[in-house]
Amino acid sequence: TSSAAAPSARMLRAMERDLGLAPGLAADRLANETEAGTRAGMLRNTLGDRFAGAWVSGATSAELTVATTDAADTAAIEAGGAEAAVVEHGLAELRSVKEKLDAAAVRVRTEQTPVWYVDVRTNRVVVQATSRSAADAFVERAGLAGQDVGVRVSPNRPRLLADLVGGDAYYINDQARCSIGFSVTKDDQQGFATAGHCGDPGATTTGYNEAAQGTFQASTFPGKDMAWVGVNSDWTATPDVKGEGGEKVQIAGSVEALVGASVCRSGSTTGWHCGTVRQHDSTVTYPEGTVNGLTETTVCAEPGDSGGPFVSGTQGQGTTSGGSGDCTNGGTTFYQPINPLLSDFGLTLKTSSAAAGTPAPPQDNAAADAWAAGRVYQAGATVSYAGERYRCLQNHQAQGVGSPASTPALWQRV
Image (tube, rainbow, N blue to C red; front, side, top):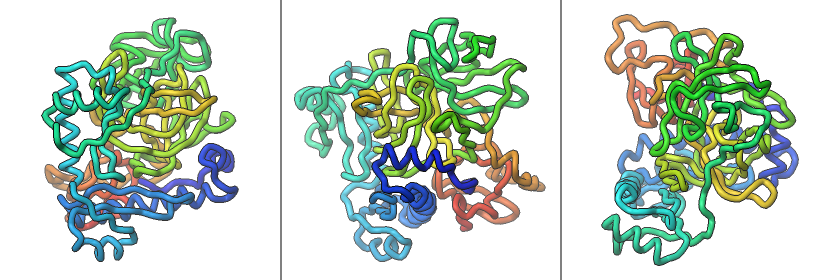
């Protein structure tokens, strides 16, 4: 569910600090972003294959733009509360171009072309490279020579953010240090989500207090950057993440934020920092391997912050993977989205909404496509619930409370 208690004053002040907002604007920004996600989802369902992406802009994210490949959709987009952008390529077409680059990366070295992604705001696939010639060579090897692929020349090369010195976090095999992401459960086993590069299956962990903690149950890296640790009975899963000044921020769900939306990150090295989503579905080449499906942000991070949580308001977004720069001069950080992690490992996110609400009633004679708590749904997916059909508006994991009938921010009856 996307509803939750209002963000704390400390969290809002941190957003105002890092995003350069005037006092009082952070709360308006979060409210606008929540509403924009629902409106964008409805318009995505209306446009179908003509949908080419959506993003928010402005100091308070008050402007929602939805892109389409057909100018005839302009009136419908404006009626849905958004500005229309008429573009050449649909989102599905752009993703197919990026997939060709992903496939080429298996065959060729990509140290000089470390990042590529779909940029919905420019309606292009963009390759970040150390030189124009390196980008052109990569594009040609992918069979895309002559196509409209953008190039961003940058000396920055993303690095993973694990740390080999001590700190207040969790430790892997008494050597490396990473940060806890989100509390999760799998059946009766409690644990936490974190970065895949932090540890291999079977690696043991100790907590910030050096007490025995748990074991990596599953880990994927490279390709993806996701893992989860099962903890012993001395540790209890909570919906909390450490916010500004150590304040606890309760996670209510995992509704994916739009491009341009606000995100904040917590890490054991640098604490709490905020920024915005640049784009989803980025592919990143680290010295240790290539990872697909990451989200790029303007938030800074440093070694030891790996695995820590990214949140937007009270919605969990993902776990810190890597980046470039630092929190003194600013930087770019990528996170592994949380919903694919939950889906791949069969985990349930620990949330405040599940603890506080009334569970949705079970369905009698449920159909094969029946809505179910704990399942991860992608925008556009359809389910049945209580004899009605619904279409998903925003990527999220269904919570134990808030059925499709009672969460219009996430589901549209069809």
